[in-house]
Length: 156
Length: 156
Image (cartoon, rainbow over all chains, first blue to last red; front, side, top):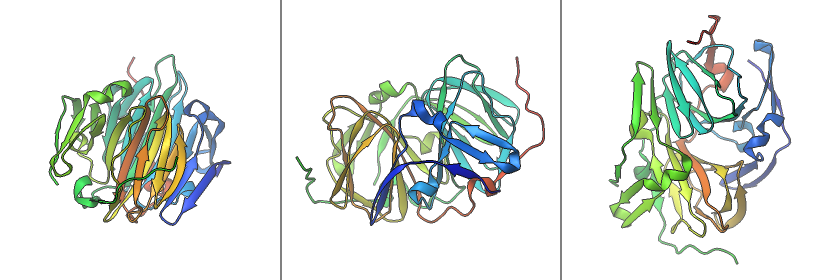
């Protein structure tokens, strides 16, 4: 399913990193996502994988206005999703089970979960959605990390 | 490397989901992470994989106070990291290259990148760090998603 995302995002790269400056969260609605197969233009949603060169995950930055709702349920073939709510409040519905979400709520959804989301509050709802292949993480955080003994030095 | 994380987090589960209510971001410093191998207690950092049953990623929620810095560089064996900055400003240093980060900046770091982070501002810095296995994502967002034709219904 092709999507068109036009965004003027300042980036900077090194051999082992890339940074994308997407701007203040409150201005997320300046991003538009064209999804022909859904016959929709989605405002306030920015997928960042293409700008960062991510290879293990996709991330979207989202602002859902007061009263707005995702107009469909969806599942996934092989990806786990995590919804990280960072501002405001709303509701998720998964397999017919409806529950409140708010700043600091994080929701893991299995590929097979049929999910939707709404902002039933009177303020903007902000969330980040991350998808990664279900079952793909081999090493835990501290098993995978390698700490250096080199002292940290910062420029003045 | 064993770590001890004690947190009283309200969760709710269904067959295909789990939600963890971690509380307002401003109260993240109530979480403490004991890392014996680093001889450190880290305040304001919460790893959520264990509470959510994540299988494809690890996520940490982070509040770094004004003037604070991560006191070491680290690399990874096989995981890609994404640092998503959601409030405040600071600096990252990767392979000796220092750059500013701020709300809306997202940084992808390859496993081999030697990274550190500091808050050189006078306000709290908030960020989310996600790690997933480098190169593990097979299907793009819209290739992996399956939209339902069932109309969305919400309880009153």
